Length: 328
Image 1 (cartoon, one colour):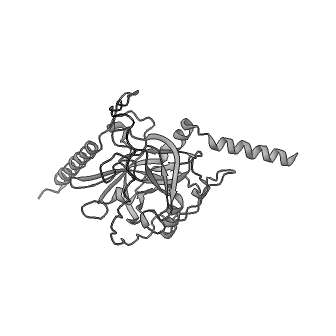
Image 2 (cartoon, rainbow, N blue to C red):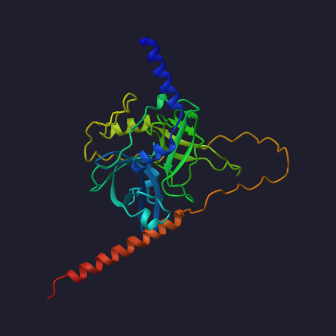
Image 3 (cartoon, rainbow, N blue to C red):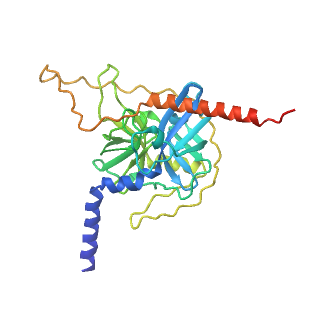
């Protein structure tokens, strides 16, 4: 009888694992997802990150926090916490801004660790899930800030494939997913049915070398890669347990040593795609129908707006300092 009950419990858990309560998952996981903004002069970058510890540690992609021109981290970095309700108005959606600093980064693995300065108490966190237990065909969720979409957008899909040593980079193991990702999703979490990070969204494929559009091909660094890299930064993070999920974590130092910047490596050229099959009909496919109200944010416009706000703040602080100078 005991064996029968155990078997039934296992079957019930397996059935639940195949189903995702998207509404519940989003309500639980999205508060631990941040928008990351970096700025240097007129150059800016927007991406996504995941809070992995209540001290304010955030994991994201290295290319999100690096200035493309200087190849160094942006001198100004901010993490924006999710509001209670996302309305599409950047002034209210991005009101909870916290300064951030770079703890470590790795261009080759495209990973970075940030530390929020004076974060609010009781930060929500996301736990890591063991990617070795994830199979092709399993449902997954991404939360991030895709260009021309909404902030803290949820997209869904499945694991499509997996690659070891992606692009001939040793140790860079990735999932391929059909989950919708775009600019702005970089560095954000790829979540399993329990809302655990099984990947860090890092790359999208949009055009073949001959200009042919590519759809539904995106890549996420496996959580095992992030876990190993974090361990090398003296930040041990354990995988969450299934029965039950353990909320506790090992103590993490407030500031881990900054990793040395590795040399730049050339990006390998992807293999040429197979020749497309001939079209059955020369007719132009119909345009997709939009069933929801379009309220997107413009990535470049958002960067310009934040840059102007920073300039205005700097000017205001300069004027305040001048007024505060003692008179002779």
